[in-house]
Structures are given as structure tokens and as C-alpha cells.
Length: 227
Length: 199
Image (tube, rainbow over all chains, first blue to last red; front, side, top):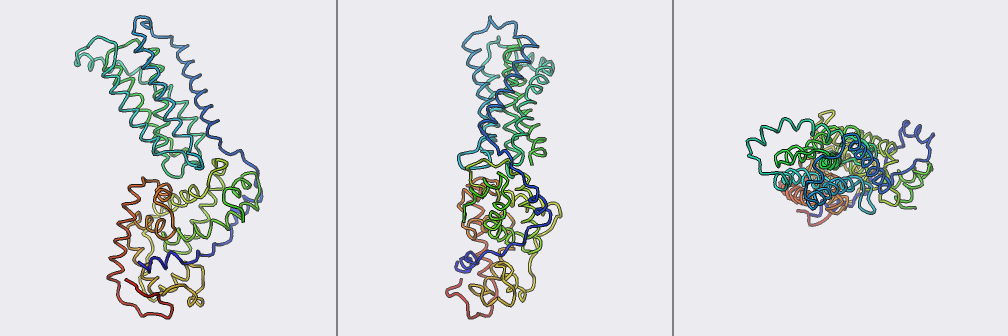
């Protein structure tokens, strides 16, 4: 369509002079420390893990730790750790040569983590098969675990939001969801090491649910702080 | 002239001259994009200033060695979306075809008395702009970024905050809609600068 081609060939318009506000800002321009994503990620992971470890130190490890299959304990613990690291990595570290992090991938990862941990918790648990009705009736008692998990998730979410300020003109909601999912997974890891309940409904819907709830809350709140 | 990456790094190091060079390098293209989206020169100028103010305030979020252009374009995109939402402003459209050459001249930064220098037939270009303005905002942006600004589908998707697949669909639908609109555009008097073989 040659009319559109002609339109594409038009020389760009002459921009206006800088506004008085911008000139005033430039008059007092100072050097800034630019974002260093890998360093930020390292700080985010370290501070969050120390905070999570502090929680466990205060709350004590689960009392049935030595009665549980070591394979399950380790593999599920590693899954929680991966659920913590991967979304935070994608939400904070851009691909080489880009300024904005990979918010789309981060968002997809947060959905996978939220759904995956609920499903895995329901399917893979060392507890005896509890009738579903009993599991459901015990569910309201999981409120304490949900609170603890969300309290653990706060640090990675807040720290991530501080690090991402201004970096995400688009996709901030998805990146925020990933921060929430990462924080929720740290909460899940903390509950994995602290909460002695082993039935699938509790592990799946409460411990796994922490990831989804943290992701939703972060997606709702964090973009206001990041933009 | 230094590239955007070097200028952005020097600017973050506190070099105000680098910011001015960056503005001179990026602002014309960015203004062209904003003007095609907003269709009002005063609004586009305002959005441009707002975009650079946001870039300035968020400069600490820049990652050294990265290309700042997609990020700056994304800030412009977001600024346009926020502004149109804030004012619930329908994109201004030119209703009187007599004004079209002035719109084309405004788009190139040339004054009305310089309109003979505008490449292509101003009436046809005006009709194309008019048709562009009739497209839904997302399709218009896809056409502007991919067909007029020469961005790749992936770059355009990154700027608009969508997937490459969605951007491809928007660009295709927008282009098809534009073809239909131009196909039914009333015949305009040809000028001496008219390009041949128009649809």
C-alpha cells in the first residue's frame, strides 16, 4: 500500500524545546547508581532467606521432621526453593541488552507455581489418606499457616518492588505477581519445615495456596509502588 | 553522533549534555509515534515532555549496556494510555478534509506554507492519517509501530506490553482495516507530488 509507505517515509517532526521543568531538573543533574539486576537478585535472595530462616528459628522446626521420608522432605523442599528463585529471577533480571525484566515469562511462572504447588500438595504428601470431608473440615485451621506464609512473603515482595521502581513501564502487574509467587514459595518452604500437618488438603490448599494468594495480593498492590 | 546506549550511560553519570543529545536523537521519532497516536500536536508535545520527565525520574532503573529505546518507547506508550484514560479523551480526529494537508505538515514538523515540500500527495497522506485515526487504538498502535516506525513485531510487542502473537494479529487486522478504509476513501484531487499506483 504505497500511501502507507509514503507515510512511513515522512521525515520525523521537529520536537519542541525541553520544558522548563525538565530544564530545572537538568540544572541540578547528579550522577545516579544505575540498576544492577544480578546484584539486586543476590541481595533479594539473601535477605529473604535470612528472614525466612529467622522465622523458622523463632517458630521451631516441625516436630515430625525425623519421621518423614527424607526423599519427600528434600525433593519438595528443593521444589519450594526453585519456586522461590525462578520467579524472582525472571521478575528482576532482564534479558541481556534490555532494561525491563522478563515480566511476561515471570507472569507465566507465577501462574505455574501457584497452580503447581496446590496440585503437588494435594497429590504428593506423606500423610495418611484423609477422607476429603475431614480435610475440608480442617481447612479453616490452616488460617494460621496462611498468615505465616504471607508474613514470610512480605520481604521479597517489598524488596523486589523497591528494586523494580521505574524499570517496568509495561507489565508491572505480571512482574509483581511473580514477586508474590516467589515470596509465597519462600513462605511455602518455611511452612514445609515448620508445620507438622501432612494431609494433602492442608498441604495443597493452604501451603500451596500461599503462593496464589501472595501472587494475587502483590499483583493488586505492587504496581502502584513500582510505576 | 553517539548511540542511545552511550548517551544514556553518560546521562546517568550526570552529563546534562548527553541528555540533550539523547533528546535530539530520540525525541523526533518518539514525537512522530505520539503524534500518530494522539493526532493532536499540542497533546503529542505534552506527552513527549511527560515521557522524558518520567525517563529522567526513572533513570536509576536503567541497566548499563542495555538499549534504552524500547524502554523509552514503552514509557511513551504508557504515558499515552494513562493520559487518554485520565481525560477519557477520544482521540482527536480531523473532520474537515481541507485541514488534512496541515495535519500532514504538522506530522513532519513543516509549516503549512512549506506543504509543497511534503513527500507524497498531501491529500492522500491526509486520507491515510484519517483512516489510521479510525482504527481502534491497539490496531492503530500496531500499524504505527510496525508499518510506519519500522519496529519488528517483537519490539512492538515489548513496547505495547503484549505478546508477539497478539501484536502480529493487531498489525494484520489494522493493516487490513486500513486497506479497506483507503479503498472506500473518496477520490481526492491529485497533486503534482502524487505518488503513482495508489490503491
